[in-house]
Image (cartoon, rainbow, N blue to C red; front, side, top):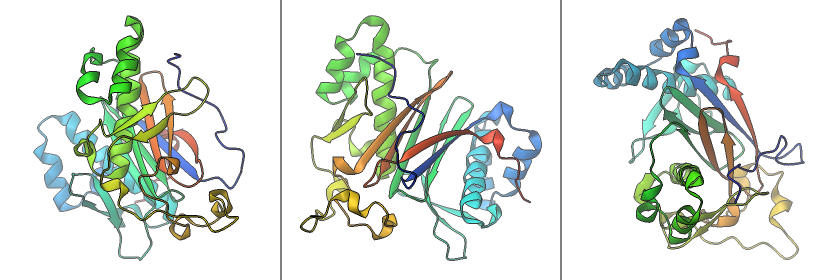
Length: 286
């Protein structure tokens, strides 16, 4: 099995396909003035939370994460970045953003790893999750049997020695991206669903046991109607398939020089994923 993720410049052929942006920021590459501006946007509660971290690098990570989200939400909606407020969900992630303007926030998700923050954002998908992991990490493949579904653990354990860790990391980032998109974290159970990896196609997912992601009534198309027929509808108005239906979940993998990124996207149509460097965004407003 090839270790190289399915990568291609254009992941869908239609210009009207859902769009997902993935922004990467290396903390060391951000100008101090940008970080200062990020910190000026923090609420009193966020500032208190930031200062609870003892290590400067963790305080920086928190400020960069909040700053990136506010910048991207502003970019997508026109609402000034300092007007965005975040509410923590039951599992500790910022799940909702409110600004008092009545403008709905696009789907977003955030991930950090050793001085790098990745933010995914899209107004075209129902739910969105992202995970980034640095390639320079210890050997963890032996944990596959403990955390993964049996089929995934077998793939890792049966691989050549030099391939085991990268296969483990592929499965791990995909699983993390999915549970973050669902909003339950690893409490969902990493062995309740499993991925299949391909050499020439994106990963696919199957659900082994029911979970709270499956509690939406099944959508059945009208006679002659296909899911593709609703591709031009805003996602909020599209017919709702089960939120846990494998057909509704799409995944992408990005292999960078120092990190591996996985993205989980809930949408009737396969989204197009664009990777961008956050250093491109210099039009920050006060």
